[in-house]
Image (cartoon, rainbow, N blue to C red; front, top):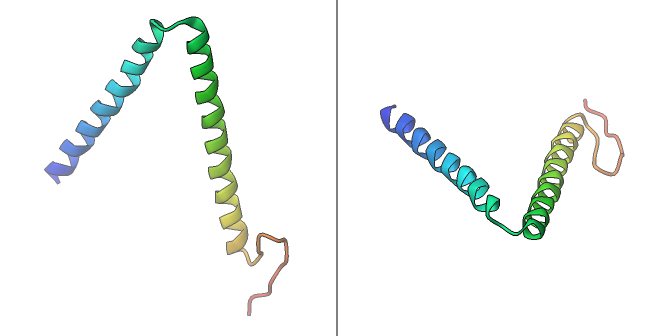
Length: 76
C-alpha cells in the first residue's frame, strides 16, 4: 500500500514538472513558433477528445444491441 502512494506521488511530481517545464520553455520561444506549437497541441487535444467520446458512445450503442451500422438486433 505504501509503495503505491509513493509511486503515485512520483508520477504526479514528474507530470507537474514536465507540464511546468514546457510552459517555461514556451515563454522564451519565438512568437510564431509558440503560436504554431500551441495551435497544434489544441488541435491534437480536440481530435483525441473527440475520438475518445465517439468510441465511448459507440461502445454504449453496441452494448444496447445495435451495431455500428445502425442495424438493431433483438435480445431473447
